[in-house]
Structure formats: structure tokens, C-alpha cells
Amino acid sequence: MKSLRQILALAIMTALALPLSGSPQQNPPPPPPPQSTTPQQKPPTITSRSEEVQVPVTVKDQNGEMVTSLRKEDFRILEDGVEQRITNLKSDAVPISAVILLDDVLKKKPQDQLQESIRAIAGGFGASDEAAIFRFDQFPVQVTDFISNPDDLLTQLGRLQLSGGEVRKPDYSATAPPPQVGPPNGPGLPPSQGMQLWGGNGIKSINDAVYAAAQLLRTRAHDRRKIIFLVSDGVESRGNKYSFPDTVRMVQSAEVTVYSIGIGASLTDRINSILKKLAVASGGDVFYASSRADLERFYSRVADQARNQYTLSYSPDHRDRVVTFHSIDVRVKLGGLTVEARQGYYSAPSPQ
Image 1 (cartoon, helix red, strand yellow):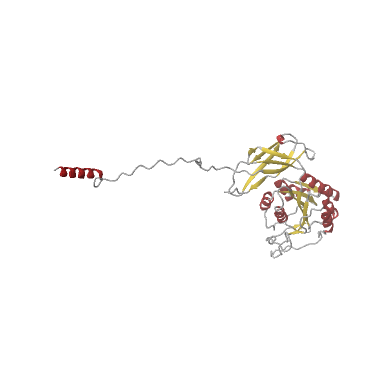
Image 2 (cartoon, rainbow, N blue to C red):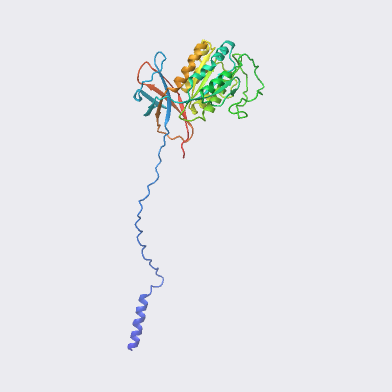
């Protein structure tokens, strides 16, 4: 009997130790996560990257003479109408990279004056400067690569013979050969189409010539003053491949300043001359010569003015995802002074 009670007690204890049928098993709670020894990462933040913009500026008094004693506090810069903080001002002389762009279809008198004075162009360039020579009529033609030795530049200018007196008939079929721009056998502008107008003793395309010169200057170093040294009567044709806005865009995007010397231009032609428009849009200047002495004086003045401009710097607070034009308005706080600076620039897209 005792044995039976022991057997029953053992069976009851075994049944209580087993889980009830149909009841879910309870899993033990998970252990707490280990404490991380590294700090928790913050979500990424979007930052605006601003490129520094440098603006060459010329300031003149009422007599047309350069003013070179201004301080950073004397200037104001507005981009797209919004005032910017000027971070730096430099007035040190800057080396020049120039394209000397010569009109090859002038009338007889201005052509003779240019030919007689042409060697004097080299006098404005020093050992740290460089210049390439172009001539143009209907098409721009690069005569030399960039020359950094002033004596070599003088020699090349002395060898240059302007055609001037040659009269070429307009090519209405638009089958003329493309111009030579850059090294021989290199790519050039395609031939222009449409009616050509006579200018001087032939036809010319100033927009295309300036466009090609700016395209070449685009390859030069950013820390050099890039200028186009344009000598022409300003009589333009209607057969340019590139329009005036196209040309201005190339000039501004290449950070090039156009200095125009008008020769043989009448007073009426000077009012709305393309020579003046190109100079104003790029922050350059225009001079009009009536003699060989005028030309030689202006040659020296252009180089001196380009080399000794102020350079204002600022960092705009924007992030452009596409190439965008931004207008620039440079002012001085002192009265009686005029300011020459480019009217705007094209920003490069910021990396994503």
C-alpha cells in the first residue's frame, strides 16, 4: 500500500513538472542590448559651398585718370541686387594674358596708321606677360601662339602685313572655308551664312573673332588678367555665326576683359558701336584714335590699365546646380568717380 502511494505521488510530481498540453511555451525575455562605446551618428547636414568670385575693377576720376588709392571700405558689390561682403581687395600688378585682335579690312588711311604703329603694341607687355596675335576679316585667323618674350612679340608684330587694300566679295553661298583658330589644322568656326555687309574695304565678323579669342584665353591660368586687345573700325557684318549675346556669354564665362581701340570710326558709329558694347559688358574700356600717335598712346594705356586694376573678392551664398548667370554691380562710396567692371559672371555647377 505504501508502495502504491509512493508511485502515485511520483506520477503527480512528474505531471506538474511538464508543460500543460496546448499551452504555448514562454520564451525568456531577450537580454538588454550591449552599451555602444561609439557615439551615435547624427543625420547628414546639407551645407552650401560658395566659390570665391574675383572682379577686376577700374576706377577713374572726372578727367579719365585712374584712381589707385582706394581701400576695401570704399567699395560696394551687389550680386543679383543683393549686397555682398567684400573679403579682399588687391591692387598689385597682375601678369597679362592677351589676344591681340587686329582688323584686317580697314580703309586705306586707318590701315596705314595701324601698320605703321603696330610694333608699338609690344611696348606695353613685360616679361611676365604673354600675348597671341590674331587677324580677322570674315573669319578669325590665329597668327601666333602665346608669346612670353617681349622681343619675340616685337619681331612677330613687325613681320605682320595687314592686307587692308584687298577687297573680297561677299560669299552668299556660304561655302567659304572655315577659319583657322588655334594650331594649324585645328578646329575652327564653321562658315557664316546669310547676307554680309561691307565694312572698311571688305567683310568682317567681329563677334566671331572675339568669340574665338575668348575661347583661346579660357585655357590660360586663373591668376592672370585675361584681355582681348581689339583694334578695329567697329563696322560689323550680319553674317556672324555667333550673336552678340553668345559672344558676351563666352567672354564673361572665360573671365575675359575686352579693350577696344577704334580707328577710322565716325562719330555716329561710336554711339552704338559694338566696340563699346563689348568693352562695357566685360568691364573693359574703349578708346578712339585718329592718328598714329593716338594709337601708340592707347596701346600703352590699355596694357597699363589692365595690369593695375583693383581685384575685389567676395563669396556669394548660393549653390548652383546648373550654370547660372549672376549680375554684378560694383559701386564706390566717393562721389565724382566712375567704375568699370564686368556686368556679371556664369557660375559653375556645384558638385552634388
